[in-house]
Amino acid sequence: MTFYVYTLGCKVNQYESSAIARSFIENGAVLSKDGENCDVYCVNTCAVTEESVRKSRQAIRRAKRKNPYGVTVVCGCAAHSDANFAESLPEADIITGNREKGRIFELVSQFMKTGERIVEIGDISKEKQIEKTKAAKTEKTRGVLKIQDGCNNFCTYCVIPYTRGRLRSKDINEAVAEAKELVKEGCKEIVLAGIHLDNYGKETGKFDLCDLLCRLDTEDGPQRVRLGSLEPVFITEENVKRLSGVKNLCHHFHLSLQSGCEKTLRAMNRHYTPEEFLSAVKMLRNTFDDCSVTTDIITGFPGETDEDFEISLEFAKKAEFSKVHVFPYSERKGTAAAKMENRVPKEIRDLRCRKMIAVCAENEEKYRKKLIGTVKYVLFETEENGVYSGYTPEYVEVKVLSDKNIENLILPVKITDVKNGAATGVIV
Image (tube, rainbow, N blue to C red; front, top):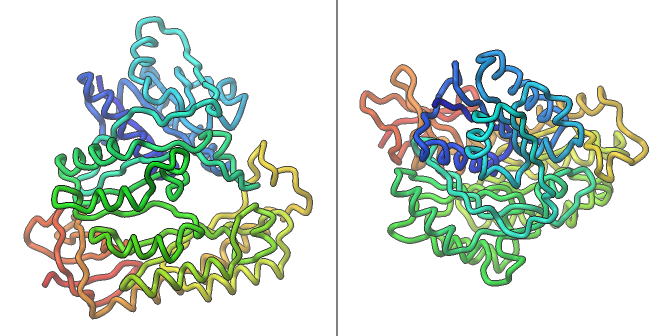
């Protein structure tokens, strides 16, 4: 049996896709790299925006065209976000939510025996424990370790609490054991992923994210640990002090902003002010050398005026992020924001998005140029025509020429230039 897993969305989905892949491989199946003429196609969906749901539908229809006789599986958040999802996607043979991801091989086996369509979408709000799955190494260099799921925040624009359920965490001993297993499989870097990562362990009170990082900072642990998205309220003096003692921690912090306008943040039900956010950024930069701070920004949220957008734009300039993911606001059925008045027309949302991207791109280039002349340790991942590409701990892409195979090696590189969004350098 050959199978292909197509992943949309965040690092959590990437982890879950690798866990699905592990379940198939352990049962004798072969993972396809290109998805051509497979026996099973699995689309792990995202529902953060309407665009991501649309891409999910496209992916399953594309899979059915590749092999009309293959088994097509749709799983994940999109199934929870739309009650009519199953009826609107007749191309799918199996449709499941997030609770059933650990049973996909079992469901495929069942479908192959009966030929009867399977729709199993459990009530995710009742889930109280994180699933007992393990990631498989799907990249040559990096592993993703999901340690937390669910969210209790209920930001007004966000569908995640309805598709992922409440906060729940992986036991710290299980997380450490899984990380060490990924290291044995050859992963030089591990990304810790979660829907609300900084709330890891909060529901039990027995451990927290800093505890786990300290447990992973050992000789038999990963050479690098990278954090997924964090809430700015996590960046306190106490937590920064604890983080600064973790030697293998990448100096790359993704703090979720969403808007630089205080009025808009209140409407989003975000629990910080722009000033508090900027204070967190300064604290990180004062503590970690060449600290990289990245973020997300939404444009055109309901009620956002031209003045509000300009305030957010000026804040982005001031914060000087090294990378920004900018999205125009997308209505999500069932959220509080979908019922708000004073909606911003789509063309204005998109225009503001383009303006924000242009401003943030200048800061991104400025940050990369600051690294010229410095020596950074790069984990090399890919090669094309003798040019090897990899990432620094700050998550800056670096390209070098080498006549030797340096994939999956961490090597010191002197940064000499910046071209086309990436740094170039020479191995020293």
